[in-house]
Length: 514
Image 1: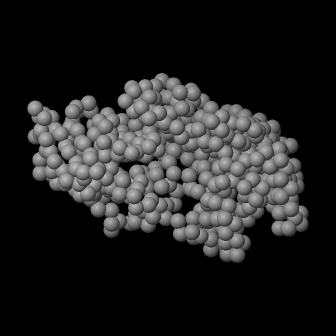
Image 2: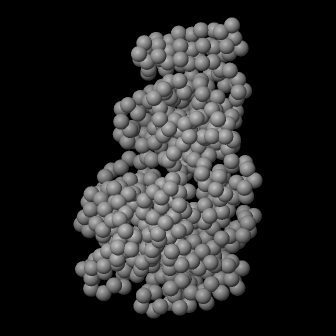
Image 3: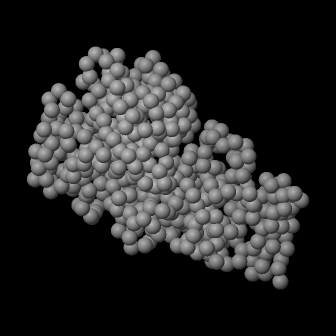
C-alpha cells in the first residue's frame, strides 16, 4: 500500500478531509447485498465508513442448492425450498431496516442448472427480488474487487471457491486482469468417479489447465470462500495460533502441506469441534484441501493470505467512486470511529502531530499505524476504567478493519493498551505479543505512553498542546509548553511524562514558553 509521506498537505494522506461524510459515501452507508451461492444464501448489510464498512447485519442459510447438480442437472429440490424461504425472510428484514433495494446475485449453481431461470422467476414472483445471474468471469471479477476493498493496490492471484465452482483472477495496481472459471467446487467434486485417486487426478488436470491459461502467478495467493476459511481455522488449530482472526491470516506452501496431512490423519468430528466449524462446512473440507494442495503445487505462490472479503464486498466496491476506492481503508475506518465515539473528535490529528517527533525513522507503513492509534485513542472511553485497556486491545485486534496484517493489529492493540495501562504483562493477550518482535513491542509501548501523556492536554482539536523534542543520541526528551497549557501539567501529567521517558531510556526536561 502506497501512502503519500507529506502528512501536512490538507488534501494528501490520511489526514486530509475524511470522505465518509461526503454525499457519494453517505449513499453507500447502509447497503444490502444477497449472494445466492451453490452452498449457502447470505444477506450482508454494510454500514459505516463505506471504504471500510462494518457488517450491520450478516445472516447465512446453508441451502446446498448445488448438491446433486452434476447428476441431475437441476437444483437441489430441498435447497430450493430453503433458499426461497431465506429470500422471503431477507426481503422482510430489508424492509424493516429501511434499506434501498437489495442487490441479489446468483452464481454457479443457478447459472448451470436447467431450472435456474425457473427458480429466479419463482423468487421474483414470491418476493419481488430480482436475481442477477452472473457468469464465472464476472464472479471472479467481483471477488477480486472484494479483495481490493481490503487491500488497495494489492497484486497477486485471487482464488474464490464456492460450492460448485472455483474462479481465478489476477490483480495488479488496483485493477483486475485475466479471469477464468472452473468446476472445482466441493459439491461437484463429490460426484467425481474413482474415489480420492480419481478426484485428485481430475483436480490436477483442471488446475494445470488453469495454470496454463493464467500464466505464471508467483506472487501472493488470496483465498476467498468459506471452504478456504475453514481450512485456515484448521491451520490455526494445528499451529496453536493465538489470534483467531481469519482476514489477513497468512499461510505458506509448507503449512498447506502440513495441514493437509493433519486433516487426512485426524478425526474430522473432533477437528470440527475444536476449530468451531459447522458439520455442513466440514463435510466439504477434504475436497477443498485437495484443490488447495494442487493449486500450491501448480502456481507456487510466494505466500498465501485469507480474505474474508469477496463477492459481496465486491458488489459494494463496484458502487464506489474512484476517489473513495483510493482511500486507505484503515484510516478511513478510524476517522469514522473517532467522529462517532470520541469525546473530542478531531483531537486525534493534534495528538498525532504531538507524538510524531518520537518516531523520526518511521516509514509510511508505521506512520499509518501511529495515525490510526491516535484517532482511536479515545473511542473506548465509555468502557469501565478497569477494563478500558482490554477493550482497546480487543478493538484493534478483532474489529472489522481492513488494510492490516495480524502483526499490525497487535501493534495497534498494544499501543492502545499502553494508552490506558503502563505494563503489558499479566493480561490474557500475552500469547499474541509473539506476533511482534521486541523492537516493535517497545515502539508500541512508547506510542501508547506518549498518547497517555498527550491525552492530559485534551483541548480544542487545533490548540497548541506543546512540543516534544526527542534527541536519541543524547537520551534527552524535552517538552516545551505554552503558557496556556501550563495549568494542565499537574502531578499526573508529570508522572506520565516520566513513564514515557523511562521507556525511551531518556532524561526529561520541561520548558514553559513565554
